[in-house]
Image 1 (cartoon, rainbow, N blue to C red):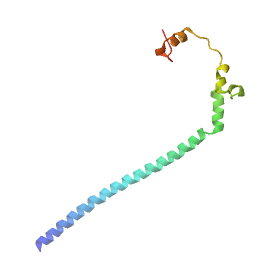
Image 2 (cartoon, rainbow, N blue to C red; image 1 turned 90 degrees about the vertical axis):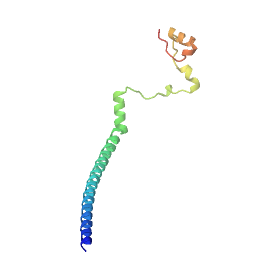
Image 3 (cartoon, rainbow, N blue to C red; image 1 turned 135 degrees about the vertical axis):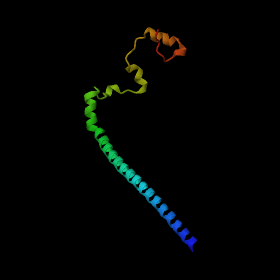
Image 4 (cartoon, helix red, strand yellow; image 1 turned 135 degrees about the horizontal axis):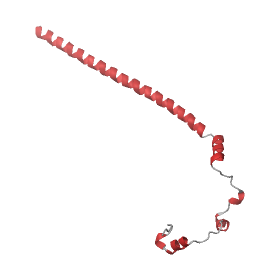
Length: 116
């Protein structure tokens, strides 16, 4: 009987130590879970703020005002729109410069600007 009592006591101590270790491991994992949930909530809040900012920055009236103030652009006139066939006659004539002539004569440098 003495050996069985000793075995039961050792088994009880081992189970107690095991439960103790499991308890603290679970508490550690729960703390990590709470941290992750808090981070997720903060990220969702940030995403909500970013979406609100995005929609404010992309308001058409605001963009139109900024473009008018900073881009110096004019609306397209109907005379500026032409068919592809008539493109050559609408473009102003460009005088040929010596660098254009040299680039045109050199077939292997086609499309590259010549600089002496």
